Structure formats: structure tokens, C-alpha cells
Amino acid sequence: MREEDGEASFRVFIVVGEESGDRLGARLMRALKARCPHVEFSGTAGSGMSEEGLESLFPLSDVAVMGLTAVLGRLPTIVRRVHQVVDAALAARPDILVIIDSPDFTHAVAKRIRKRAPHIPIVDYVSPSVWAWRPGRARKMARYVDHLLGILPFEPAVHERLGGPPCSYVGHPLIERLGELRPAAGERPAPGAGHPVLLVLPGSRSSEVGRLLQPFGETVARLKRDFPDLEVLLPTVPHMVERVKQEVAGWAVAGTVITGEKEKFAAFRRAHAALAASGTVTLELAIAGVPIAVCYKLDWFYRRLKQINRIIPIVTASSMVLPNIILGRNVVPEFLDDEVAPERLVPVLADLLRDSVARTEQVMAFEEIEERMVLDNGETPSDRAARIVCEVAGR
Image (cartoon, rainbow, N blue to C red; front, top):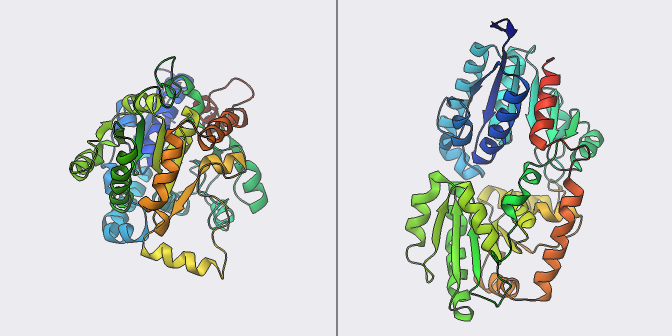
């Protein structure tokens, strides 16, 4: 810690690998600034963290890939970026390293820093889904992660059972933003009271978009037969805007491509239903009260692994959808691989766009999520996360 104007500066090195981590990182930075006026940041960042003053070592698009096929195609760049981040972190001599989500990238950095500079405390913000996939990772993480900040209420108990690092539930950042996600009076007309609004969310990674956008477009075309006045909104991240615009240009419904979080949440407040890739967005939609059909298409390697899993269990969760996991029951329908087909999706989405039993069941179940996730002492998730980061760093 350096001395500035008589007070010790607090150097925090943050590593993120994609946009969702950047949003968490930006809120954490604001909370740390409030606690420590002389905090200094370095590391990797997207647009949100850059606005808070962290100049990224490189664009996140260099490492924001998912699925073995996509990773292999970008592997030389990813490996080079891992080593670049490690070298930069060691040169910065931080008081603490915070890695956020994107475990394939951020944990590769953390392992190397623990080996080369074991005195630097490491906090991991967002647990890998050890409760669903490869539970043995929890015990391995304990070797190089000093404290884990869980954003789902069941994660501390899971890590204790699996021998993972000490874990604290800090609350999901979405519970800070209920007012932004939930519609005001008149923003979302009742089903049938106006034209139906469908959200289409094919993911934030290039590999996801490449696998899902075509069947999503075919599904929209068939839905238009039953809903001639259907409005389609496609929120996407900045680095995917041009690709999504090009690919939806020929759709049967002229979808509106949206970018920016403010515009995305405004679309959520208007929407009657959503067709979405599996991921954090499903929890955003649930909190916004938007019924969902969730899809995921694995690349060739993970399809093969799924077959092996029948013999050697690797995947242990009964659902890939966060609202289902939090609720402890499968309320949201999910479609995997070959199930992601218009003939399967259209009947489900048609039901969700209408005033149906299926729609009502999802909306009522979503009301339980806030009760399960809210913090009990009035702290916000960002404040609690910042407090624990400071404690682990000895501040």
C-alpha cells in the first residue's frame, strides 16, 4: 500500500473476461470507492469498468468465447492474454486480486498468480457452477482462492459440502435493480390488450449466437402466423450488434436490435414473453416477470460429453436454468441441442404470449425469487462484496 496525502492507497487488480463480469466489476468499483477514497484499479475491463476509471489491458472480445470449439479457435490469443494479465498483475503489486466470473479465463490467471506471488490474496466474485457441473472444481479452487463471493443463496452450503474455499453469499446484483426491471403501470399491457411483444436473446458470445440465431429466426417466422402483429425485440451486447443486425435482416418479422442496459431493461418491462439462451439473462427476465422458454445448443465436444455423462456422471443439476435452480423446481421450460427446433418452441411461446395457465404459473413462481435472494441486513450486494474484499485484503 502506498501513501497518498497521508493515507494509504489501496491497489485492487480486477480481472474480468466478458460483459456480465464487467457489469459486476463496475458496481464493485463504485462500492470500493465509497469505502476507500484512495483506491486504485488496474486489470481488464469492459465499458462499465472503463467508465469507472479502469483502463483495460485489452478488449474483452479477445477472450469472451464459450464452448470448446470456439476456445480452440481462439486459443493462442487467450493463452497470450492470460500471460499478459499475470505479468501486469505482478508488476502492479496489488493489495488484492479480484477475479470475476469467466472461470476458464480468470481462474487460469489466478492459479498462475498464486504460484508466482502467493502473498497476494485472491477473491473470486461469482462461483463457477460446481453445483451443476464438475463438482470436483470446488476443492481445487480452495488451493488458490482465499474467499468466494457467491451470488446465489445456496452456494455457501454447496462449497462447504464440496470442500471449496470459504464462501459468503453477497446477494445477486439484480436485487439492487428491481425498479429498473419491473414495469410501471401501463408499460406492459395484459396479454391480448395490445400487440404481443417477444424478446429474443440468443446470447452474448459469438458461439452462442451462431448456434441459436437461425432456429430462433425460424421460430419467430412460425409465430407470426398466429400473431400477425408480433413485435420482436433483440437486446444484445455492443460487440454483437452488427452481426445480429445482419442476420435478422431477412427475418419474417423485422426485429428491433437493442443495445445498452437501459434500453434492454426498458424492453424487459414491455415484453410479454422471451426466447432466450441459458445464462444470467434468465434470472433478469424472471425478476422482471417475463415468462421464458430457454434454449442451449452445445458444441460437438460437449454433445459427446453429454453422451459420456450417462455412464460417468459429470453434470449433476436437474436444470440449466437459474430460476429453476433457485426455486428448486423446473418452472421454466428448457430445450437442449436438437430440442431447439421451431416445432418444439412455437407451442410453448404461443402459450406464454397469451393469458394461459402456463404463463400464470411462471409469473407466480417468479414472485418467490426475490424472497429467496434478498439480503437480511439492508446491505446492497455491491456493498457487501466491497466490504468482504476489504476484509480479505486486511483493510
